[in-house]
Figure 1 (cartoon, one colour):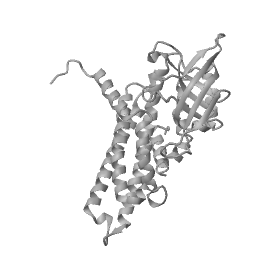
Figure 2: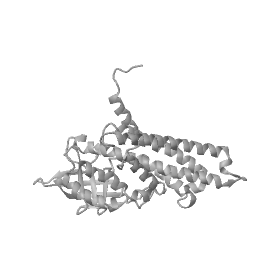
Figure 3: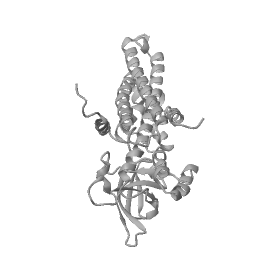
Figure 4: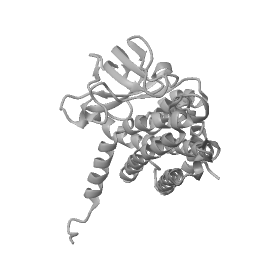
Length: 336
């Protein structure tokens, strides 16, 4: 059978169950959300040259969208790309922040402002190669430094016009399309980590004795385990439903129709995972807040939950977007 989104889901979840989110992201999180843009929106020449390098692992890539003053509000980005007088190059200037795997990437799929109308139509996507004028600095985030989260500083970076992805002014739509798979991927990884955390918590509750009894013999602990397990299985069912939809929908995750379901999937995953993490930490006690030892997967999961709730689109933005998109398709004549 052909490789599909279910195969990808299993692959990511099994890796995520290592319980080391920073290490897991260092294995290709930035590559995984930027390389698809090269294949979906890049020219034939770009796909042949850069795409080949990325697939073989000769080069690495990162998605450079977020800025110090523009996170979920992508249309507010300030990074500019202005054409040189001869029309052969773009001069790129600006900052990108919280760029996963940015420290060791060779290419940056970069959102830039090419117009001056103050609307999303100003946004375009460029493939920026590391070179003169481009510098990266490590950002120490909650979970780990090994994933190379970076501040990307671009000062008069010269980019050939052939590196424009698609057409000028199409960047905002390309970003939105690309976000679908990224958000799905975040949910997949988080659910994989949740399963590892719940599994370790269950085993700990069976072996830890307190006041002459194992933890799992205490009704309050069994209630917490049941709560965590029920939330986890509900998320898994939702994930598999959305993944099936992605497999059967023309174009897969890239498209308007799946934007709202995937947004709600990520929203529900991060909200429910916070509850799961809370139950697991309370059962594991001190081990649930210790980076090493038997509670390491719980501690890592607890940290990653809030990280996942922010990047790829915040919970509030995604919930609002999903409802707005549903309103567009809702029959205007429908009333109680």
